[in-house]
Amino acid sequence: MRTLITGASGQLGIELSRLLSERHEVIKVYNSSEIQGGYKLDLTDFPRLEDFIIKKRPDVIINAAAMTDVDKCEIEKEKAYKINAEAVRHIVRAGKVIDSYIVHISTDYVFDGEKGNYKEEDIPNPINYYGLSKLLGETFALQDDSLIIRTSGIFRNKGFPIYVYKTLKEGKTVFAFKGYYSPISARKLASAILELLELRKTGIIHVAGERISRFELALKIKEKFNLPGEVKEVDEVRGWIAKRPYDSSLDSSRARKILSTDFYTLDLDGMVV
Image 1: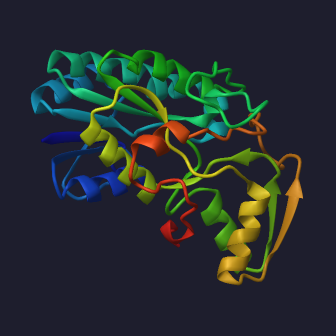
Image 2 (image 1 turned 180 degrees about the vertical axis):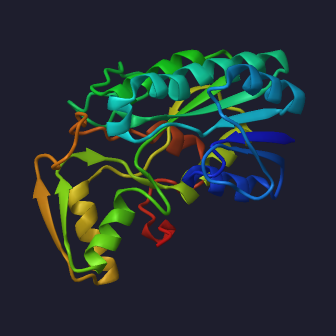
């Protein structure tokens, strides 16, 4: 099977490429960080994007590319829209021409964070432009034969857990937003996606870790690695531009019922530091 991965140099893309290479012919597409054996492609160059997909004729397209800097999305809205939404429309359009199965990675930030433990059927209501752009991407991706995977707080060599580890290791203080989310290691998410590919699921499914506050998570990291710095809980983080949902945690019970992969348990060993 031939599988095309956009965002192949990102945290999830790296783990997907590693896992899928064992069973699939993998076409790795990147834009910023160069990777061996990959193709550099600007996803906002829509004619070239569609042409590339149609010529490569992948059986599966996994769209793991996104502009994920929440504050940057709030400032550079046009760019965020092009990458997180409009590019998805062109990926889907080209994919339909060659009958590709499309898997689109989305986010917990499509929700407002008022209640947490969001199910697939809950109505999205983003409170920042990142969430809105990703929700628009979902509308373009949602077809009869496609799958949208919403996830939360992916980490590998970047993300909140990595920031916590490095800051505490230096003996500094981590100021942790007291809100909740459902962090998952890129390694575990990639394993779950591989199983979903084999099941050929469609629609929307939530694949994320257990609900935890960033404060609690920071304390777990401090304890596990015996780090010297301090952890303090705050209502907001200085310097933030965009609003953040207070509790964007996802209910992944549907995925846990159909998958044998243990993606739910917090995987701090999945950090690359």
